Each structure stands twice: as structure tokens, then as C-alpha cells.
Length: 219
Image (cartoon, rainbow, N blue to C red):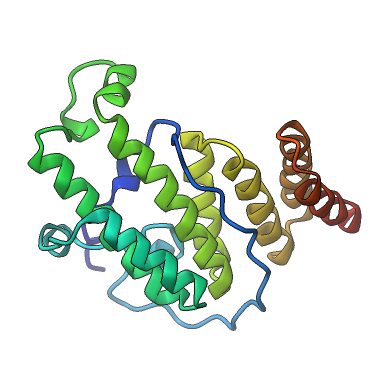
């Protein structure tokens, strides 16, 4: 069994709420594809995480394009339904964002940080904010590809970071959809309930109604 590749992803150090994240439309569900055998070179389960398609350290360090341009390109691919390509581009944006922070002398990994966690969050605020947004978008594309476990892992990270409204509500709704399609109605119900409460709080009646319908259907 070979060692897992060391990835370079801003999601790896995501510890702070995203600020200024753009609200995205709720993704519709797609049929779950049939399971295929895992590559013998990848440890079992690794291909089901949010980092399954992340770049290696060597690949990431070679990305020279502007991170914002890469993210815009990824958004366009996602809008066109090219979600596999979009995920790759989002991961390039992650690497580019990290490279930009390092070049500017602003990035420091948590492993090398000697201060408190809050200090780390503050000093790496812009990088962590970008991490939350990209995690969210990658999760939505994984949903569209039917890679539900990978999507759930992305939304787990996004919600743990504390992505700002209304994307936190959309993440709960998307994650609930993934859980329901995987047969875990208990977790799906919890997420739908949270989505209802958040959309009500944010005064978004259309999405609140969608969440209520999903919750009622699962009951």
C-alpha cells in the first residue's frame, strides 16, 4: 500500500468562517453512479474525501495563474455542467491561492504555528476564507457527479469552518440530499431541519419552502 499523496489545498487549514462568499443556486440531485473498484495505488476511502482530486505538493507549486481567474473559470465549467473539470479547476484555484499567500509572506501552516488557534485564524484570514468558499463549491460539483461521500466530506469541512449565510443553509440542504440518497434518513432529516431554520432566519421563503418539502417527504 503506497502512502497517500501529500496534497496542497487551502481546505487543509480551513479554520475560520468565510466572509463575502457568493450565494450559489441549489444543485438538483443526480442518479448515484454504480460503484467501481478503487485504484490499488490509493488507500481505501481516500477517493471518497473532499481532497480526492486535490493536487500534490509538486503539482500545486507549479500553478502560476491568478487564483481568482481560476475560480471564475471553474464557476463557468460548473454552470455548463462540466463538474469533473470544475473540481479540477477549483483545486488549481486552491493551490494558486496558497502560492499567492506564501509569495506575499502571509501563509503559515498550522503544523508550524506556535501561537494559539485564534491567532492562526487571524493571521491567515484571507486564505481560510477562500478555503471555505472552494470547499462549498467543490461539494456542490461532487453532488452533481453522484460522489456523495466526497460531497458530504466537503460540506462537513465547510460547515465546520463556518461559511457565512446563506451558503451555510444551502450546504445543509445539499448535505441532507446526499444523506437521503445514501439511505441515512436520520442525518438527512437533521440537515433539512437546520436548512429550514436558517432559511427562515435569512428570510428566504423560496428555499425555506424547498427545505420544508424535503423534510416533510422524508418524514
